[in-house]
Length: 291
Image (tube, rainbow, N blue to C red):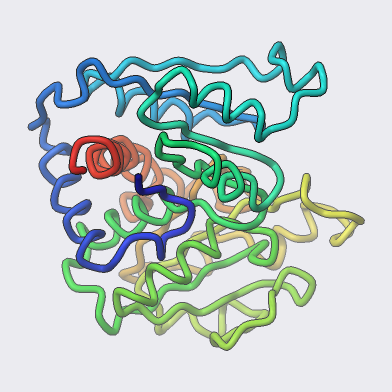
């Protein structure tokens, strides 16, 4: 049984097949191929887009979705996560979709289940389906990503989205440039800068990130307003350049991206959300149906 914990769990050929399936699904072409399949969602961390996207994807393919109410589950009585996963797995689901605030939890659970474990985000480690939908969005716009440049801007050090996108987009030929204040930059061999203005004229896309305040062990910026004065993506900095703008959501308006750009046709945020359903349909097909 194959799992999706990180983007590199899939080969480039496998990802290309997922993108091809997502293209078909985004046009409304799909069958109820997962009829009689059962998928459990296990979210230990709040989610709107990811959970809803997976549930809609599963229902479009005909699967039954069971959502475990973590707040009222036996984990609150002291049951370990592994025991929870093993007990759920004993009920015969075909996949368990896991989100957890701690890095590594989906990987640990994958060692104890027959069902496919799909990582819906673990701590600051990885968010593979977000990176896949970002790749899909970029490829739909540019067709060929070889030689294109993307700036990832913001709280990169604490971002699972950034980690997954760095691996995946680099693999598909994009140059990734990291833009952040010093305390938000990880150690990296990639090109980095503290000033978006330094690279704005050479990038083809900008991916803004949400400031992960819940993952900060101490205050790292005087205020979000101060952060925004340096790193908010504004109409002034982008101008009339032919640049597309992405964000994994939720967007802090006028902190991550200004209102005017969110309404701009170059902004792909809602397109990313739509593409997320198609990509997650393709991932579920890959892990449950194409076996």
